[in-house]
Image: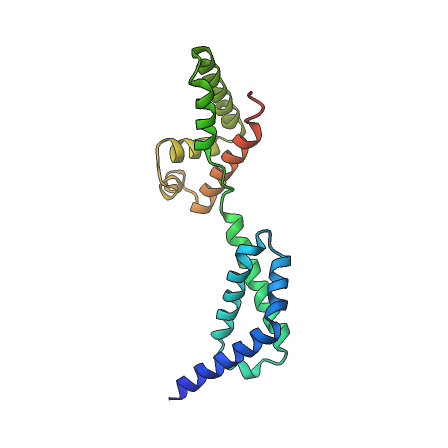
Length: 177
């Protein structure tokens, strides 16, 4: 029975906190995010969930300060996760765009092939590992974890290689045209 009282008191604490500081928290998170509309509510919920885990919320001296300290930690972890994710550039879109141009003329097909070769050589010179990661993952369908095992590096490092390759292709696609 005591546990039910503790849960009820936690819920009351969070309800009061959300009512008094919810808008401030939303503004605080939104001001620090690029995609505030989609991510701020999720991060605010994560802040409240972390506060729900506190056993003795009565011992918090300055509740707003504690709330925003937890929010800053949540933001920091969110940014770390986002930094480890590769930027999404759909290479298939790039390939299909180049192939649509090449569908009409055999001379144009040769030109497109030469562009692919120049992009590939440029990427290879820029970073051998990024080139190999792109070819194995996107070309052969090898999972990133398997590539990491083959290279003897971490999964995060392989994600960085892939991100580096895609960023290179995106930046240099216009150069080969």
